[in-house]
Image 1 (cartoon, helix red, strand yellow):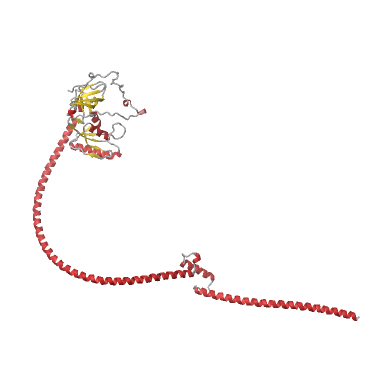
Image 2: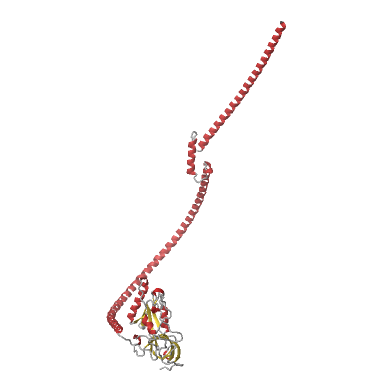
Length: 467
């Protein structure tokens, strides 16, 4: 029984010891955890105190910075940011965005102030130098003023002397002026008498000129109404050959030249200038003093050129050079182009001389004089675009009337000199005319419509003797 009690006691003691050990371990672990927690709490409190201190320091620092930047210590950050942006727009609009700060602005302003101070210092130095130069100039000016005053006094003395001299000279000049005025009055009276005489003479001459003009107009009117003219033949056909060669009684003694053309007129006509032309010839060779060979350039088989027919040119005259003027639009070959130069060449080729002509631009080249024999009239330019040519035509016509120059149509002029154009412009097709295509003689001789030779004087192998 006692053994069981000891065994129970031992078990109880062991259980108690185990429970004590477990309680001790639990208590130790709890104490250890509480100690570590206390230590961590202490460390956290220290860290909190350090953080609070840092926050207070940063807050104080921020407040100082805000005050240094000109803001209040309790200003809202948003208000500070808004004010900063406005300041940057106002004071640093040209700064880059990463360069916009109050320090950069202050540095820029400081540099500008330094530059302004330097310029101000330089300006003060320049001002000082300018003042010194001005003082020097003032001293020089005073010196020059004194010299000028002296010169002025001398000039006044010289002026007084000159005034006295001028007064004496003026008195002499007035006396001379009175003498010249007397002479001028006398000359004016004499000239007025001479002018009166000249006026009377001019009036008489004007009356005489008016009478002469009326007489000239009457003579021109009478001449234009006369049926004939006073022109005579220049020569005669001495011989005609069947091959179209003729000989005329003009040569070196008559100042005849090659290529001069003549119109051929019937032997019985007394007024070749007013007669119908039979044909034309052109001088080809000068054979003697009063003998030349010519070729027939135009004739009519029904009225052939015969020995004894008269020849006449209103351009060429024996031993005399005639003068001409040409006006209007000249078109000899029908190509609508001006042939003014060709007509001038024809006149000069036939021994004449062109005094004036109407150029293509309407200007009058040369001048019509009393020595001009004929005014050759081309076609009058009627289109409005040819106003310059119309004015030139009217001017030359008026000059011809004033100088008593006889007008002659272009066709009559060409007919009398015996000109026949070789080339013509004709219309082909439906608008063609039969008259533009006359029959041509066969080669080797001149034939009439029946095919026989025209009756002429017998052919000779040698040139005839002029008569």
